[in-house]
Image 1 (spheres, rainbow, N blue to C red):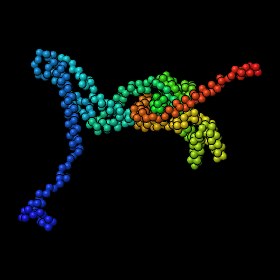
Image 2 (image 1 turned 180 degrees about the vertical axis):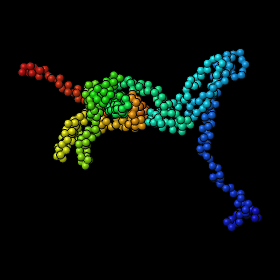
Image 3 (image 1 turned 135 degrees about the horizontal axis):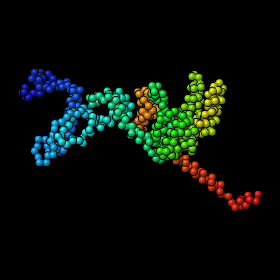
Image 4 (image 1 turned 90 degrees about the horizontal axis):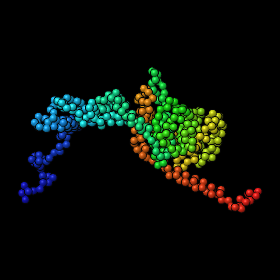
Length: 440
């Protein structure tokens, strides 16, 4: 075996030539500037969109002229007279269009609407940002980051005026089908009136339909959160087709009980348990609130209404023994208004005895309207509140089942069967019994 064919060992020296033949890793040899690459891609996309739109405009001009530019043809009906430039905001950024001019014929392009400065998708994105909760001032920064151009707050406000018609259509849509559960509430927003800041009431109603899903039924301005406003609000719901209401849940707002009973006489009224407990705790010293709150929770943990009434009387007695007579008085006066939910399936009690469903929606409205401050008028306040609720309704909020309505149907079936049994027992009288009764 020669040295050339002898295998290398650990003791065999490696020649410099051998070391040079070993490949070295190239890690770090190339560095990619992601920002420059992204900038280049944005420029390429923008230029491609610009070239495509200009090519379409040229093709449309050729079709109107009956021949291509500089071409001699017996079918030609007009000739070019140059072009004018026009800016257009697109999702790829701002592009420059070269709109052709014709010598005799008007050039009414079907590609870009006359006087339009933004692509429809851009306008829709601006409106959706506003409705989703982005302030008009913040939209300026977002549009610059997305498309390289700033869209002013006044432009966003003008676009929103176009959406108001669609919001009004949504607010006044017909209501089909029955809604056994109806939740109503109101909130106050600020508006300017004659140089002064005044309150405007926004009334909201949410219903649970026969399939157990929630739906925002109405958003309306109330001059005041009083009986007249609530009466008009409930009539508005009924005129649009609301029916089948069996339970109305709300806080004890001024006039809401009388208005609900007037428009929906067959429906029960459920006073929100959470608001009622807060009313009681407002008459309790801070150091005793936790103890009293636990006592009140025991009332609504009862198995039926008689047990809850007995427990409430027991709690009222304890409050009097604790020298909390004002809290005991509030409890005795209003506890009956908070126990209507016992007439419905046990599986529904926790969700229909409070107005928490609407409280979450009201937080969404307040979060969105906080950036506005005072509205110029009541309509603007209602429109923004309705826009936010319409945005929420378009999510999976209304697709998820909120209640299992099979429980209510089963309870109705049992009640009907029991009622028919009582009627049959009442008419099951023998002829002898009738004779004896007449003889007596």
